[in-house]
Amino acid sequence: MKKLLFLIPLLLFLLASCDSRIQVTHPDSEYGKIPIKLNLAPALEQDYRITRVIVTIRKDDYSESLDLQINGELATGTFYGLEPGIYNITVQMFEDSAIIASGNGTATVVAGETATAYITMEFLPTTGDLEIIVTWGTLPERILFIGNSYTYSNGGLDSILEQIVWSNDPFAWIEIDEITGGGMTLQNHFNTATTINTIEEGRYDVVILQEQSQMPYLDPPTFYEFATRLDSVITSSGADTWFLMTWAREDQPQQIVDLQFAYESIADSLDAHVIPVGIAFDNVAMNPNTPLALNLYNTDGSHPSQEGSYLAGCCLFARLFRQSPVGIEWTFATMTEEYQLFLQETAWSVCEEYEH
Image 1 (cartoon, rainbow, N blue to C red):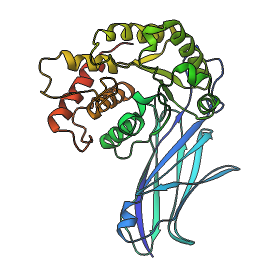
Image 2: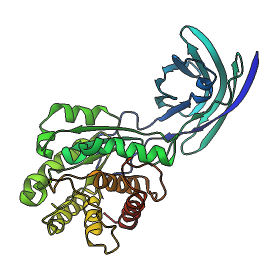
Image 3: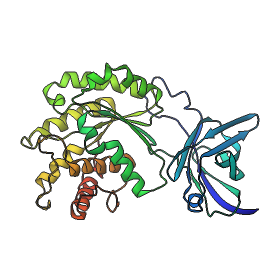
Image 4: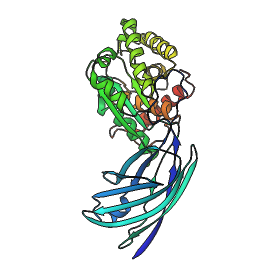
């Protein structure tokens, strides 16, 4: 039997909110969680067919096992509600009913610190390196988009943001969901039970609200009312509220003034945050260095083109993860490198110093 030593960096944290507006905290807010991402590629390259991966953790009388979700070359899952302390870890990898690899180790859960576990995996034969990457910290891991066709255009901002994040870090831990429908307003979403239940039960770190494109300036009272109501649900669930500032219509660029005022006003009122996509759109329109023929709009002059959605994705990455998107490789297959770099630089220049 050949043995293979691999390293599991376990980055652990205790969930706690410093937001004084939260009246009902997440039920697991006093505990820790262990997100797990296991790279299966080395085993698959040795012609193993991985059908199941089980990770078990134990501390004192506590024991919990988790079947990781297998998606291509990755197996992922999360242990929630963990008390600080030393945990024994067992990893088992299966091909049908046969265990093809297993290993054991320990790790200490400490708030805000990094624990390292060395696991000796036994294979027959040796398959190569295997590693579990576990992430932690104040950056969001679970994100929910609530919006309409502006959000789901061009494959959806959820998918675009995932691709940008994973292109930047292939082992980044992130799960993104969306609840969208054509023309839906925040009022529609608040009055939809599925939306409210998803927020309350989803264990999200961030919920991003995108209002119908003209509502913020055509009917500010309704926008403010239902943004406030949704914010109450969001913060009570333990998540942070972010607003996605949309953009002016292509033939009415002056709309950005009213949109910016509306989104920043509600964000200031709720102590929430804004992703200034509309400002980035305006920056592209006003910039004399914008590449020729770069168009952020679909043929209707309202919905985003692929370039527009990509710019929005770069703004989301810059604001949520506080990192520059410049140099990230992923983009739409049809987009030129010139457009890609210009949009990345625009997003970062707008978002780097943005204060709302």
